[in-house]
Each structure stands twice: as C-alpha cells, then as structure tokens.
Image (tube, rainbow, N blue to C red; front, side):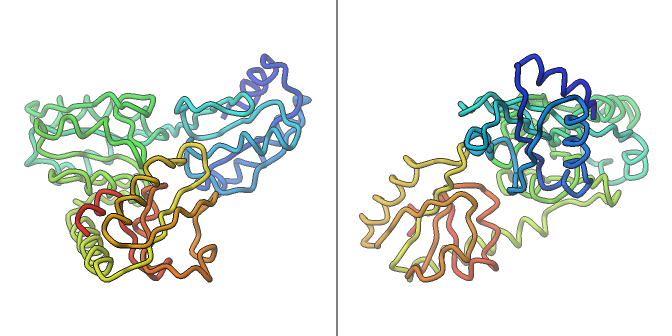
Length: 314
C-alpha cells in the first residue's frame, strides 16, 4: 500500500486528524498499525478504529466525527455512495496475483464448461483479465468468458455479499460461474442465488471445488429454519444501525406481514448483531433484515433465522 500517496490524498482534503478503519481480513496482516505509523510520519494525527468492519456498508463516519476527526480513511473496500457525517477516503486494497499457474494446475475442473461467468471480490479484480485471457485462449480456444458489470460494486466482475449483479444477469447464458478469491462467504452466497454450478478457486489454499455440497447443506438448513418457524409465535426482526445495512422500511414491512399472520413481532436494532444482545428477550425466531452473513449463523443464535423472502411461506 502506498501510504505516502494516501497521506497526499488526505492533505488535499485539508485534514489533520483522521480515523482509520481496516476490515477484519487485513487486520490479520498488521496493516492497521503500519498505516497509522506511516500517516503520523507524514504529520497526520491518526486514530485506529478497533470496531469490526465487514464492508463499505459499515462505515465509522459518525465515530470519526465524535472523535474530532475531519476525515474517515476506509481501507479495503470501494465506495457504495453512502452519505456520511465526514468525508471518506476509500483506499482500495488489491493483491497482485498471477492466477494463470493456478488455472493451469486445475484446468481439468473447468474442462467441461464452455461458457463461464467470472467473478471475484475487490482484492483480486486485477486477476480477472489474465484469467479471462487464459481461459479463452489456452483451454482449447473454445471457451467464452463473461465478466459482468455490477450495480453496487465498482469494478467489472466484482461481487459483494449483498450484490451479485455482476453475475446473475448472465445466468441463462453461462454453464457455470467461476469465483476467484479466498473465503467461502462470497462464492457460497452466489451459489445460493443461482442453479448454475459455482466453482471456487481458493487462492490461499490453491484448492478448486464446486460448491454443490455446501449449497445443498445451506438449503437444508434454510428449509429446516422455515419448518421450525411455522411453530413460532414471537419474532424479532433484526435491523443493523450500520448505514449500509439500515433497512428500516423492509423491517417494518416484515413486521406487518408477521402480524397479519397472527404472530407477535418486534423490530430490534443494534450496530453489530450478536446473540448475546438478544438474551432476555422472549423470541422464538429471528428475521434478518441486515447483513446476509447473519442467516448462516443459526448455530450461534440457537434459534431459526429467516430471510425476508421466507415470510410469505409461513
């Protein structure tokens, strides 16, 4: 990361004090303290936010203002266009990756697919062009690779946990989707949205696998949650106060639908949604109106969690 370049951008805003926000994955690389040290060497007073951060939907701009900072420096994600209490500099963090050797090593996994939808997260968007060129020119020269344009995300082929628009419009024209990246959250999220195979190339483990088994397991859990919810009477409709997850109107609509079905329902708001915050509340079932990550956390919450589209099935 070019810390001096970042400092130059901050100085152009006239900011002397900033709050630095680093996502969970990059905290593991000790990137957080490196950034702060570099900014301070450039004469910029920097405070490091220790709050969890899972995306650009989760900005700490209000905290920045409360701390007297003139600017929020958000590392690792691209701008979603949210209105903020202080200006935000988005410092995209991209990883240099030569994907071709990994594709060559696992070429047999893709041999049967002729039309491929190619997607990734922000960190690996620079690998998409070389991946596309390799797949179209090296593997028999008879493959067609589609890199779609997203609605929320910034770069072609980029997906978010709540935005798979770089992939889904091509669903009818491709044989499979190929996700290049790390962590199963994004590729499994895509697999839950499509009936086409999703092939996951894990750049950290160098493993390649189709996510059919993981998808089937998640669908079974989703169906089991709905069956358990049929017997539930008291519903908590979960809303996050994170700006990019603040879906109050959706929560209000869910609440009214539940009441029309004879259930009791309450909208419950918090910043980061954790099971311990719900202790003491007489709730049988939860409805997720916040981040898609929550629906997979049934084991933590110890009660069924529904997606909003499942309410009609109660």
